[in-house]
Length: 373
Image (cartoon, rainbow, N blue to C red; front, side, top):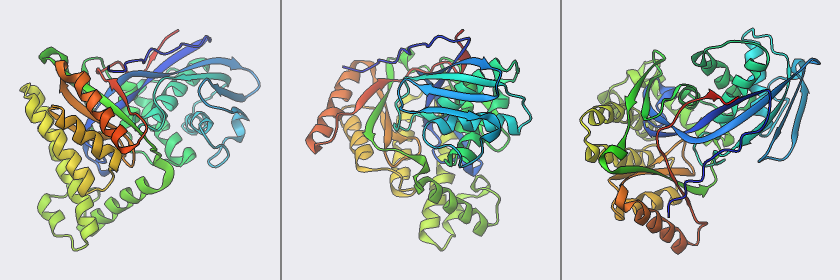
């Protein structure tokens, strides 16, 4: 049975906004390399309910996390707040850094985005909080203009480097579409994504293996890409060719860079395959992406590999890890009639390893951030 429990509990408040988690169809670790990616928004959202205050203080509580944030807006700075509340404080700091005059606020956070699953619960939190803080302060900001401050909140206050894909799709997604993001020129294009029309379904397999972008491994991969680009004499790996990359003498840098340039190509090929409704080609590209992430970029893990292998064995057209890696989730493109069998086969594979039972979620392409009340 597929687990599709994703209906959020909406807290009461003067201004309530929701922002979704995301799953990246393809284009992993390309955003901070000036490349392209193709995520969709999930139906699972984080809500932020905000009520204004006149004393310049910011408070926040979460229905899922322990602890309470209570701090003067003037006292927020990188390193001053830790844990989940750093995301809320961080986006307030980033908005003020950009010149927005925020008033104090009380926020209540409620989330159905699985934490640690690589589905960008952090972006859902900062984006919903940013919209609520702006609303309670009477500030009108276009969603696209919130990408930069929400990125800064994660990178500079939380200390989790981010390339901007997560925040962009959380803010701008449309139902029934993937969002093609070109980081080089900050353009986006909505690409129809409707596997259900052809009897298919996208499943997200939350392996429940720990996933934490601020633990250093993500930063190490990013640093390796920057070093490879420097050795190749380009600003970002997007500007390198496959032949350029194969000329790198350092084996590790060569493999890291090879993943990036081939993954960017796979994004282009996936968009073309979707235009032709060639789902078998899409599945093959998902499989190639996973192999590259596993072997060249080395960000997979045993749980992700087992989930992918089990899904394909059960009949999936293709499957791959998604997100930053080192745990988190995989996706599988499956025939509607085989969806339950794929989920059962993955759970059985995990049970045979003695691992916690993975969660299998439906992943229809859903709406981006929005006001609820």
